[in-house]
Length: 300
Image 1 (cartoon, rainbow, N blue to C red):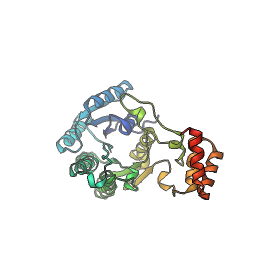
Image 2 (image 1 turned 60 degrees about the vertical axis):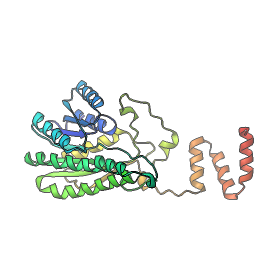
Image 3 (image 1 turned 90 degrees about the vertical axis):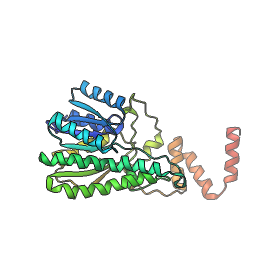
Image 4 (image 1 turned 180 degrees about the vertical axis):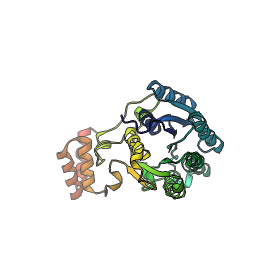
């Protein structure tokens, strides 16, 4: 693998598991010295142990991205340990409860915003100062396709990721005079099972994969490869933008009609004849006979 980051130093927040772990590993394999920052001390120490086993120069810093003293301590540790800071990946994030908006608490809203939006702001604030003093750098914010489209009851999470996109272009303009580029990546469905501690076997169906125009659910390695490119000198003319990495899902038009149902049944069962029959029954309005036939077949 190319050593695009030889001699450089990267901080990856939320780097113990999932997408963050894949990014830390990819940057390390390409020559970077890596600072893993995570709120989970045990997982963070384990991840750094795994990185070092690969010959990657890595250290762990424990803390909460929403606490400015923790953020300042991490950036100081990177600068003092390695005498520079070239790349910051703001990856740490949390989801929201999924409760209806009427039931969401202010505490939930504030915690999600503090981790997913305030955290990246604080890290950018402190890291950019070090980068500016040493001639420049790159900040990569890991947002989400939920900044662009939503499922029900995701208000805190969607708002935090939408704010992160706005923060990205604001920082890109403010930090341009200091030769600091700022970009965002927005992953869609990424299965992180194999990057947990301990790793888990993915539990995905054919429908999960085949509904994506790319033909599969994403993997953390996909995001890590994109981040590595955007953080490298090869992407030196790219700043202030958001790059969606979702297997094509956000550009896929989807209307819930009988054709979509036929396609879903065909994917789930592998039986296109059955799918076509169900579609014709739906179109003809002959649902009573279909229901009775299914009951008979299932012994219901």
